Amino acid sequence: MPSLAAKVRRFPLYAPPRVISLREVADSLGAGRPISARDVLHRLDAVPTELRLGESITTETALGGRADMVLRSDGTYTSSGRMRATGFPSFSFVVYPTVEGAGGRFRAMAVHQGRVFGTDTPGDRQRNWSEDGRNEAIRQNWLTFARDARLTVRKEWEVSGVLGTLGDIATAVAQFVGAAAVTGSGGMAALIVVGSQLGAAAGEPWPFPQLPLGVTVASGVLLIFGPAAILPALVAGAAAEALVDHRPLSESEAAFAAKVFGPTLPNREQIILTNMTGLDDRAFVIPGVGGTYLVNLGDHFDDPMAPKGKYAQRGQMLIHELTHVWQAKRWPATTYFCQGVFESTYSPGGDATKPWSSYGIEQQATIVDRWYAADPAFLTGEFQRPFPDLTLKAPHPFDHYLHAHIRAGMT
Ligand SMILES: [Zn+2]
Image 1 (tube, rainbow, N blue to C red):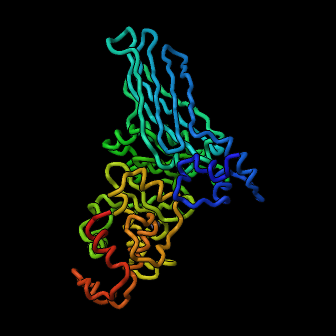
Image 2: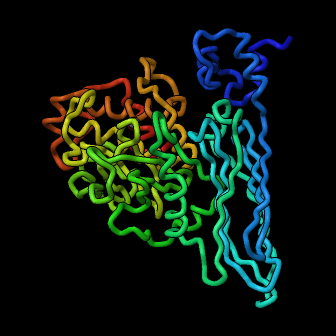
Image 3: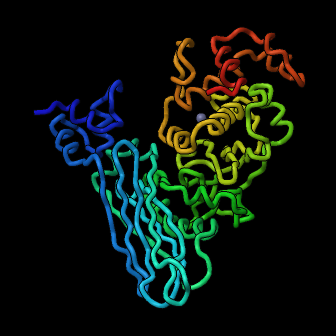
């Protein structure tokens, strides 16, 4: 009989050299307590390493097609399909093939749009698509959703006109997922967008002027559209668009940040502070559309420099969150996003000789905020000058990370 370890290693998430805990695997599989190795083995056997899902697309008119989605446990996917005008009229269409698993908590959605021409207009009757890619969230969540994954295909079509502007897509997705995002305990964790369609639409003006770029609202839940994912968010008190506050990083905040980061952050106009938080009430940063970075601070929005909880020094929390902007600017969006959502280890540990790249996203941000906060006398003195002399700061084990990576813009 293959060992439990061998069965677990079948899934790239648990590839060597990772140390695997049985409990972690059992939790991913949704196994109750107490757990036995035999029980975990049985459940693992039921999880495929590849999902092939397909569905014909029918409409009540002379338009039809098919959508297929292949997802693999290493995070790669292929979204393919076709739409065809079978009669006289021509159509524009948008289809949203969506793989849903873990009881609806995990969704991977693709967006495909185009025009197909009937006998009324010269042009191609059929439009095919096939798109390959990789999304880290698929790999990370594989055991959780692969057991019960199923494909649904939502579609819209029009005889004339163009469908599939950014506003159309945002509104459709919001209607589609809005209710799911709020249902019950641990509602939708995240909606992963596979495919580049949303990215392609990102150059368009955002059609909801009262909301920050990339944010829309559905069923009382805010949805943040990023290049790699759509994430539900909340504002304190209630989730209504009237209560969302946002503004770019101010000139004084940008000058403050530059004392730590040097010239390595995006322009301040691209850094948008908001009062939103994640569903777990944590502050978080997500790359938005149009090259923006949404820094979601919750009730800290009113005074982003104020000390809060473990961020005891003035400005420490803002430095922490801006480190995520620094990361998001340099890492591929899907990598950044997935690490941010699923990571919970903040402590960098005591070994300051480790390579910078060996730290996770939260550990790196913690290194920077602790380095910043480490010398209170320096902070209230020399640091207040427009161009502080950092050599006057008390030596710190993290100094080399700040100089060789953060301030140099090197990952
Ligand atoms: Zn963080």
